[in-house]
Image 1 (cartoon, rainbow, N blue to C red):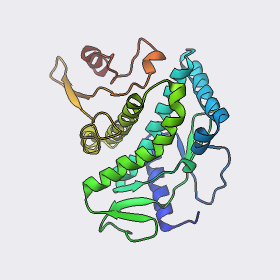
Image 2: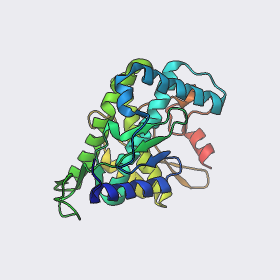
Image 3: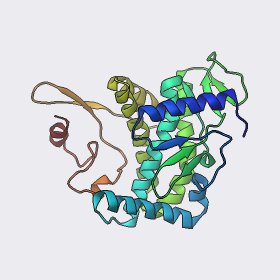
Image 4: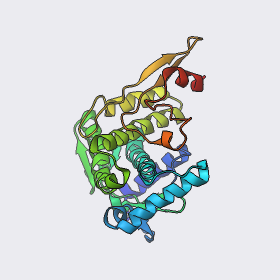
Length: 271
């Protein structure tokens, strides 16, 4: 794959994104770097590698939390981490630069031991008509903002569909639950990015614009709401539509947006 102006620019956006987001464990490769190791393609085609992917997550859960979890829980946790990372790698350039990259499975490398990822920038982008560098090879134009948001949803959907198909039997979860989790990860990544950039509300508005409601295959929208504490402070929250299964790792500490977490408990943690 040749180095182009577009791949260099996209690599710069990815590096900016990983610099902003401490929890995004991704190394950005140059297109000339040699590829070694496991790619996301392998997860969909090689059962032994898929099993190793799940086993590695079970090992990390045991090391970090002292918990031995069932295999289907480890599969869901591994899928959640992957979906959150890839969704943010797709939505981040849209949020920062109004550019939507289409990330192919072969562009994502995985270090099974550490859970870290690599990404190789590819010139397969969507931008608004009239944006800089439209009309160049690998750049598609769309007429308006909603069309660009549709490109974002489609890019995440097309990337994740084969992964969900491969992992669904191990995770023992149906299509609605899995796509609910991916939609949650798309929303939460934008929410998180808004916070790290100093404007949570901008991130919430962006996430709501991307998923204003359930849009196939995503069963629900962003659905943010506010809780008010005893001092009149307002705190943004939402309730996940697809479980990330953290409650099965630490039953006393379900995640803050889990349906199991009451509003009173959310306020207690947010205080």
